[in-house]
Image 1: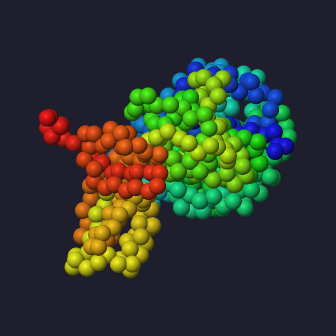
Image 2: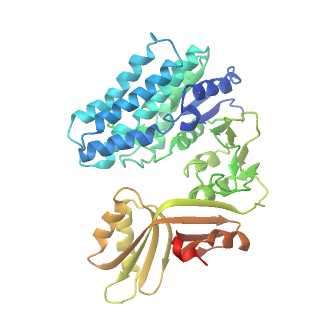
Image 3: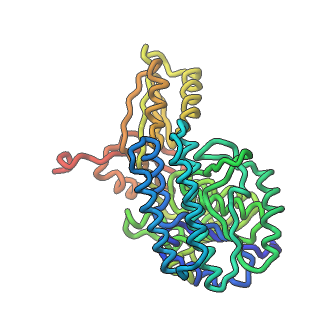
Length: 431
């Protein structure tokens, strides 16, 4: 591939405070002569903080403006440690926060997902504005770009689908000319816009996907995600001991692991890269000289057991009221409502008279789904569950993961075991 362009993505942990922003600048210093598109997430836990503001506004609790003020002060403190008090970035950041002020001035929109997307992207806009200002201040010329003017989507708020043709045209017309100039191009992850210029988001933690969109449309030589881990690990090191780093991973394996809940990469990231055979590197911003993990097409298919855990799961048991079979027309009806409520289905199983699905418990989606089907079906819901997926499983690993758990649902295919579990109450564990 002759194109020398690289795409880097830095997540919230890598820009959580002033010291972290300076560390990112030190990493980028080594690439100062290269063509580089940089995608940056909101700082630290900013997205969580804005979600609380959105909830407060939607529920009219009266807390929204106080929460917003706290968030502003956190960002101003970071700016104080990066640039002079007279720097124009203060005014720019204040103007961006006004986007939330405008929403808070109005009655909350009844469409919560629409309301969410009109506010949530402010975190990325502020973060990238601060990082770009510091990079320029540190002698690394950087051009700031609003991703909403580049990535076009439909109007499915909170999980928008990319309109690839329009997005590709925008990349060629607006980004390629910037890349001919000296310096970096820096933009936001996670956010996009409709053709009516309403802000949309690409799904929670969607900045990886944004970087993949830029990589695909600009025929990047490679894409790198900078994390607080050494690379792709066999399990979450916060939950398991003796995890190991994978030096190489195939696109297929990466797609499987992210689909099943591995948090290191957003699930939609891999496919655009695979379509153009663009390698993906997962590297550490703490140890930037490390080799990380390379995800590419041709990799020897011998892997150790790999574990992914999805929390906040609900298991919905559906059965017919008259004990008749759950037939094809029943399943069609159920899945029409699954689509309407936008449930993320991770696992399913049926018997003659029942059907069970494991879904992520987001907002009130499970409740809305249940209310839509309960007139025709009996519905029972178990909440606060975990979905554990083991790729390339071994019996002893599976037994260890079952220990201290009640298994509510289990499924196996050739290389993968999935179990839906809840903790055994402490009294029941006493032997």
